[in-house]
Image (cartoon, rainbow, N blue to C red):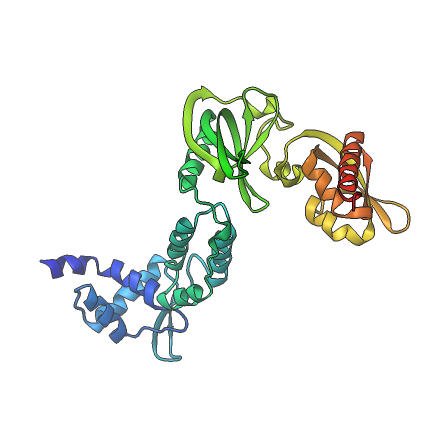
Amino acid sequence: MAGKKNSKLKLLYLKEIFEKYSDEDNILNSADIAHYLEEYEIECERKSIYKDIEILIDYGMDIIKTSKPKTGYFLASRDFEIAELRLINDAVQAANFISKKKTVQLLKKTNELVSVSQSSRLKKQVFIDNRNKCTNEEIFYNIDALDRAIKSGKKVKLRYNRRKLDNKFTATNEQREFILSPYALIWSNDHYYLVANNQKYDNLMNMRIDRIRKVELLDENFRHFSEVSEYTSSFDAADYVSKAFNMFSGKLMSTELHCRTEIIEEMLDRFGEKVSIRKGEEGWFYVHDDLYINDGLASWIMQFGDKIEVIYPPELKQAILEKSNNILKLYSAY
């Protein structure tokens, strides 16, 4: 009976054999396929294999017949190409909000999307450096809970960890509880963030996902983002990231920067091709955009030294002046 039952699954097993064992460098002939089917306790004639392959092709599988390097068949295309999976694997490994354990699990799953031979090529280039990997194993459950809250328009209650130094100068975790209206999940600056509103204030705040614990969905509807941001019909996460430097929150203000032409690439990389630019004097240009004025923006501008001058707003000028004076005081004693 087992053999008869398995024979009904023959097409499914054949599909799995092509996905697992064939690619352009690994051609399967009828003998190879019969051998793999035997491992599933299925006996078959070679003629039936050819008919089954035609059915899989009709189903939509890109199975190609070839005569080089030997006569046979292989699966020519998949949902993901090797180069695409390489990008995904690199992103997973680089993401420090994904724990080492979850990184290994995800890489194992992506490697199963290609043939055994192709998977071995991917594995040879896998390097997991866990020095900067988070240890919060709740993170995927929290992401799922926050995503459901955003889609359903509900508030959440959560705990947020921040590190501080105690009296013995040992790093410890300080945990606080928040009730928030969540609006977006954003990956920026090598971290994953929740953009939300604290019900006590009338602005947006950004919280690192790896520091969030114990997410609980509440029955209460969230506070609409139009009450605390410039967005009305939908929360534009991409636009928000372009204006919130280093994911610092702040007041959104019209901003103009006076920049040397030598840093045009950096400006376009940061603000995008559609940013408002106008010509200045020889060797200079102006950039205009609405930006959140905060310490992150001031620090970003200061890294360019004398290549950027803030024209307005005065609040940003003052922030950079204060940071510069503080740095000068720190080093003036030497």
